[in-house]
Image 1 (cartoon, one colour):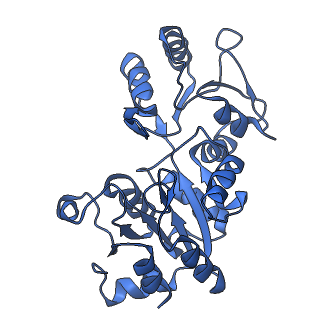
Image 2 (cartoon, helix red, strand yellow):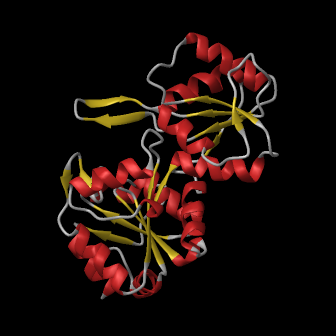
Length: 274
C-alpha cells in the first residue's frame, strides 16, 4: 500500500460510501479477484454504503447480480448503477414529461431507459425526438447514422451513455460505444453529453443513490484515465487497485493521481477499515 498521506488516508477511512468499478477491480473476465467478499462484508459491518458503477449499458443490474453471484459475489441489484440507468436519471432531470427519445443501442439499454419513465421510445421518422441516446449497438449501420444525424440536426439532445473507444472481450479489444458516438459527432458537429466515466455524472448519481454527497465517497478503480479521473472530477477520494489496466509507472503522467494505491483488495480492506 502506498500513495496516501495521513490526511488522505483519514479522508478515505471517514468516507460514508464506496463506489467500485467492476471489471479489473472485483473480477477479471470470469475470475473473482481475491478478497472481494471480505471487503464488501467489512464495509457493511461498518455501515459503509456501496455502489458498483459501470460504463456498460448492455446489461441490466439484475443480469449483473446473476453474473456476480456465479463468481461468489453477493450484491443486490439496487447497489449496481449502469450507464444506462444513469442516463435515465439524467433524462428525468432534463426532459419534459411525454418526450420522445430515439435510442441507438442494445435491448438492455432500452429496457433500463424506459422502465417506469415518463418519456417514450420513438423511431426516427415518426416524430422529431427530444433526445438521441447512444450506447454500444452491435447492429449499428449507415442508416442509423443517417437517422442520428437528422435527429441531432433537428434539435435533439445528443447524449452518450459512455465514450469508451474500445470494449474488452475474451478475444481482445473491439470497438466500443465511443466509436459510434464519434461518428455521430463528426457528421453533426455536435458535442454529446457523456454520462459515463471519465466524466463526473455517473459517479455523482452513484453518490446520490447512496444518499451522500460525492465528497463523502471513495471511488475505487483499476484505470487512471477513467475511474480515477472521474472520481477526481466528481470530488471523491480515489483509490487505484493494481489488478486491472493501469500500472504504478503510469501514475506520474496521469491527469489525476489517486489518493491511495494498493496492489490488491486485501490491501484496500486494510487501508479503508484500519
